[in-house]
Length: 203
Length: 191
Image (cartoon, rainbow over all chains, first blue to last red; front, top):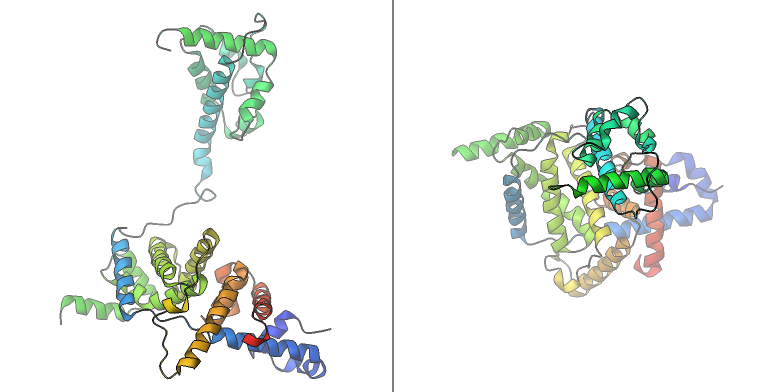
């Protein structure tokens, strides 16, 4: 068993002597390796950094001084996401995510071709159990601005966990996933309602 | 004695921690003194990584600016020099990852101290130095950082482990492999 890299480094730097000398005396391979390490260390240590012009240090100090003067006093370390009390901002973030997803969904649906007459105007996939009661969406078709009413309803009561559970997240493809879960009837009804709302003057 | 001279003398007598406090309090000249004390070692660290004066100069300025911005996070658990090296190594490793750096030619190195050497000795030494620097530049990042901090900045294995966020065992292994790789790259004739 030969000496480990740890032991060889310690030996090469002269910080370990007695404990491994017995092996070293009897092992030519380790002795050779140690000699090589010492030679490389000596060669590397002999390479100096070219000394810059004596004027350089003053110029560097001045450059740093100017840059620092433009900064003002050092600021307190910024809180990172993991330490910033994310829970304080999570509901707001979830609301923004939900709003974004809902608007994107609405835009997507307006672009779908109409195929068959609407059947059941159900919006089950967007309903958050315990957070948004399906019945609260009743004035849906009569609202002045459908997409805003939808967004307001969704975001006013949503929390981050529910956002995740319902698939209303900000990962790529989440809107497509939500759309793909709508029934054909639901898609058509949403499309009809959105078109109706967008056709109004000032929409 | 002028007020600014009195201020400089007072700052010069401060401990490291007190000097940092003076910087944070916005005391005139305090950070200048930090720069003055550490600029040579920071510049040399940068030069070891990038191998040319221009980049080493820019990086040095960047390191001090980052240090100033983050001064409130300096807790005094390590020395200011070690803390600056930690910033420096990160800045240098990011830079060498982002762009391929040109090593200076011998002609560009105008300020090598060559007093007491003959022309042939000087040339031989410069050629060998250029070869070694080029070989170091080809080492993997952690091996290069370990080799530079250990060989040129005389940092302990523990300090290097702190700077690189690794263990003493890993630092020793990296140092060993760095030396073995250099041996391979340089061959017997350069040693």
